[in-house]
Image (cartoon, rainbow, N blue to C red):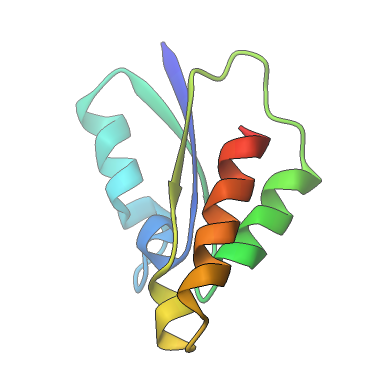
Amino acid sequence: MKYVACYGDSLVQGFPFGPRYSWTAQVEKLTQIKILNYGVCGDCCDDIIYRMRQYALPEYLHHVIFLGGANDILQGRRLEDISRDYKRVLEWC
């Protein structure tokens, strides 16, 4: 079985119904892929990066998916700051 860590905001977490009804849960049901859902509603990219760095990922992990930026735009963060956050994610991975 493949394992994927998915980081992001409400789009990952499964807003408004919760993780059991998220797209990540649907991927698990339809495939042989185990999704580790690390989505948190309202997070901006810098929040997500902070959380990523707090925990060691399992060594059996195959991929990391990062979905963020919508809340950054809604909160008026500068494009340069969002781009810098994406580069930090890439470096961390």
